[in-house]
Length: 293
Image (cartoon, rainbow, N blue to C red; front, side, top):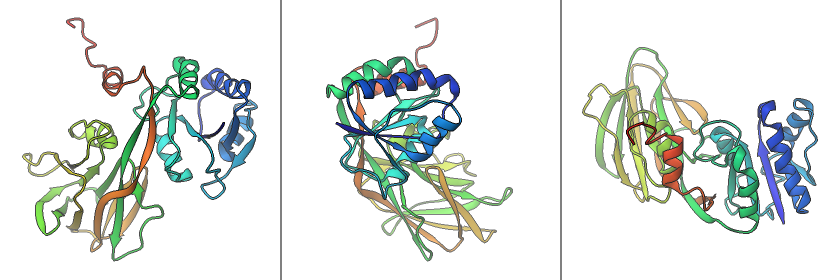
């Protein structure tokens, strides 16, 4: 069996967990391909010697025969792994080195049991929809896909922008706001949630359109089927606006039209027996943490 390990950085308090993680892989004679910058961080900054059999630097030299990809960090690291590896045939497993994580949902105290279940194939595969974002009138951003959300934001600190959202030729609304979020079900627990968007199960075949600080308070988030293509046209006092795909952002000219649709592939993740979706929601969002319950 072969696995890949991706990461950016972790705190030194996570070293004992990493030692348990790599020792498990070594004891079970599993081949490990580790992301070279992460390996350098572990060696140089944390003074540890991770077990591995090969290195990779990007998606160009990533071994497509790996059985799993382990993303070590938080949800941000998980999103980085998608962009850096770009392989959608291999399930990604999130190992959480922080506190809150919906994608990186294996906590430090679960690592031994989680690894045992994974390598005994005691899990279900969850396929997550992604967004494809195309810019008309300018070059697309490199790897123009997003797992969580695509966001349009004003660049001026004082004036709002007008985001006209269409499905086909039909106008949804002209949003006078600071911006607009187009979210996948996976992203429903991320930026969209913070502005009052609904939570969707990962297998929902929907997108969420959520305004950011709308001028009209009756403008509320709306859920639409994910087989529809969304067109955004932006206007305002400035000459540019900001758009982001997950953690990456780029400034584009005001006359740039954006087309958003479901990508032609999905990201595979694992759901372990002890981590059903609603159990994760209760734990992460602390639902029911009330003496009256």
